[in-house]
Structure formats: structure tokens, C-alpha cells
Image (cartoon, rainbow, N blue to C red):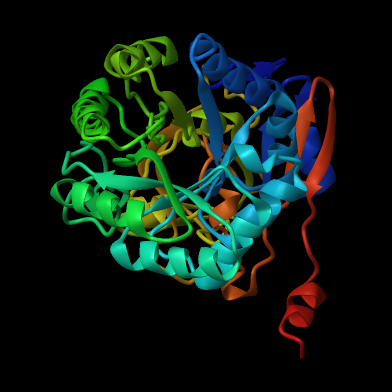
Length: 416
């Protein structure tokens, strides 16, 4: 558990704010983030690369709450965006165009046009088709697009299959062997300025070796291409460093930075880094209330008011998150084993199976830890359920940074 979340007098607090009081006031389910944790994580990454020419572009897909984006913008962060909507949010949050990278395998013509109009730093190109479309759009707008070719190095990240992006079986990137030919094409297309290579092999990576393998391979390609006369200046190394969800041992940010410097220093390049989960994952919790206990011949269920529409990772990725009570259990509290499940009408609406935890009762509150990345941002209104509000805590104060809508708001969104 992040140090910004701890028990005081038997009650879980976010910094100086009681989660019990917060839940009483805002209602459950709710997301709660620590401003101190967000700032601490960003400053740790910035310090690790302070002695290098490196843009830190927050991977917005992990958490696009405007308050968090604005906080990172004030700290000097750029943004890694993967849609026109994320680009809009990044600019509204005050992130300068020259600190924005546009990634993603399926950029549309309007999205490319908007990126060029905004004058962003770089578009990461993932196919010949996309490259030719961008050339046509740039020519039509009488401008030039700065690009990097995203290399697929065919390296196994050793992470979950659904968040692996660096193998040839993935839809992402350009096959390693095809990069020289595509770079040659890019150099000769109107409206295109190649300035580097990019690579991103996956998410929640818990060892340095896959990174080192991929970065070494791409660095050699970079050196070969530049030796052939291409004036490449930037190397985008993506994100992917994991966090501790259960008992994973994660490399520290200093070792990660040292590995990157060892591989890239001989090139004398400018770096682009796209941290996401590492910045926000540990900074958020999801607070939920026990609605019912239900026992069957095979299971003892705890049914809570948060559902897979609020938090999808457990259903989508078989993710396992630590779950803690808001009120700390005493040593004498009996222990139980429960399936912690939500109210959504899907069998995949499960947060934990056979979880050993102190006995809980109707009305008790629990928290899922480490949900600051790929949590609320992946939420939905499935079953016409109201999205959980989001709260940002700073010291002993807090504010709602995304309110819970009303049912009428959901109805009105359909234009009925």
C-alpha cells in the first residue's frame, strides 16, 4: 500500500482524510487519489532522468482525469495520447504541444489533421497505410509532420497476453525487418519528417531484462539507420514498468533509468519516455460498501456496491488487487474466505476469489488498492449504473474531481 494510505486509530486514511468519513459524505462506490502520491511518483521519474535530455510524456490512457492531467502539467509533464479525445484533454489541461506524442495503431484522418493543426512534437507511425495517409493530410494542410516509426522488436515482455504489444502476433508496431524500407519511404514522402524510432513492448512489466532486450535491439537499428545517412535524433522508449499489485518485486526507477542510459548514451539521442501505470497506479483506491452476504454449498459471497462497470481490470485481465477493510480488523476478529463480487449481471463481475480476510458484515466498507491506473478511465454505465465519482485528497482536505451523475444525465446523453 502506498505510504499516502495508512491506518490511523483503526481507520484507513488517504493522507489526512478518513476514508470512512469520505464515504459517508460522497457515497460509495468512489475513487480516491492522493495528490502527494502523484507528485512523489512524478518527481521520482523526473529525478531519475534529470541528467539526460528526456521528455516525460504521461500515458494518458492510464488515467485521463483533468485534475490529474493538470497536476502533471504543472510539474512539467508531457502527454502520450492515443486518440483525438486524449489530445483535446491534454491541451485543455495545459500541456504544451511540443510535449505531446500521439501513439496508437488506428489514427483517423481527422485525428491526424488535429494533431498537425496543434503542432504536436511527434506522431508515432505504425504502418505504411498510416504513413501515406499522414503524408496526404500534411500536404493538404501545407505543413510537415514530425514522426517516429514504432518498431515491433518481436520481444516477449513476459507480462499478461492481453497487455503484450512487442511480439509479431500483436497488432502494434512495424516489424523490425521492415523498418529500413518504411523509413526510406517516409524520407521521400511529402510532408513527412522522420526524427526517430519508437518502441513499446507492453504493460505491467516486472523485470528489466525484456526492456533491455528490446531497447538494445532498437538502439542497434537506430545506429545502423543513422550510419546509413538518416538524420535521426530521438528515441521513444514507451512505458511499461509495472507496480506491485500483490507480491511482485518491481525494479526501482533508478535501476530502470540506469539501464536505459547504459544502452542509449552511446547514441547521443534525445529520449521520450511514456510512463503511465507507474505514475498513477498506486495512487488510487476504490472504496465500496458491502451490500449482502450470501452463502451457497460451495461459496461464501460478499456482494459489494462497486461493479465491473466501475473497475474492469479483474474481469478483463484476470488481475488480482489487494483488498483491505476501511476499519482495521482487530486481532480477535474471525477470519473468513470469500468471493468478493459486484452487483452487475455478469459472472465475470468478480474482484477476488476465495480471499482470506477478516469477517465482514453488511454495511462494512472495503477498498481495492492500486486502482489509479486503468480504473475509472475504463469504466462504463453498463446496467445503467452510475459511474463512481473521483476524489483528490491533499493533506487534510479533499475535492470531487469527477462528480457522480444522475440517472437523468444518462438518459439525456442519448438525446431522448
